[in-house]
Amino acid sequence: MLLSVAVLISCCFYVLAAGESEQIVWQRDEKKVAITFDDGPDAKTTALLLDGLKARKVRATFFVVGENVEKGENAQILREMSADGHLIGNHTYHHVQLTEVGEEKFKEEIRMTNAVLSEITGETPAFIRPPYGSWNKKYEEELNLFPVLWTVDPLDWCCNSSQCVYQRVVTTVKENDIILLHDCYETSVTAALSIVDSLQAQGYEFVTVDELLLE
Image (cartoon, rainbow, N blue to C red; front, side, top):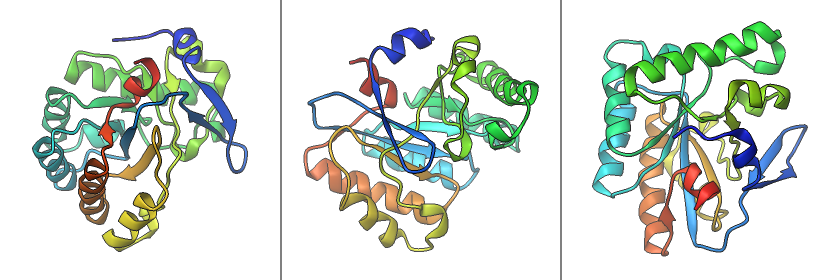
């Protein structure tokens, strides 16, 4: 369901993160956590991840790249993702750093991906994760998209060990955190499922980012 930016902003607050980016932190008391995945879908690794999440009855949030959705049979992976109840968000069409392009390119990258996702799933995304956390708030209302960053980043893109990724997450995560992973890496998929098993054993419930905002 598409929600206005004004409503979403009223449900959360910001704290300053490293550098110039802002992190979104949720004011909640429940022992919940959101696991999110960027840069997919990938024909092999995303399919394996979806199977693993389904077996564990976990719903995640996927921020997908438009051009990746249109590769091969990846549209079908997106349909399965939607059917399984995962939240699908925008991650631009070409994975560009939005603040390094002009206004028209900024909007085009987002609208192209929205069009692709809407055609496949029948729903227009309400959330975006800007690549590299680089965003310009002045376009939020016009684009009707709410930016979602993260609070736990194991830097899985530069780690070739699933155990390393797993340890970086489970030793730092706390309730209401948003975990950042990438479903295009096999090590990250392996780590993600181990993270789910470990945190579920500790009593955590996995929710999509909209549930952290609105419930």
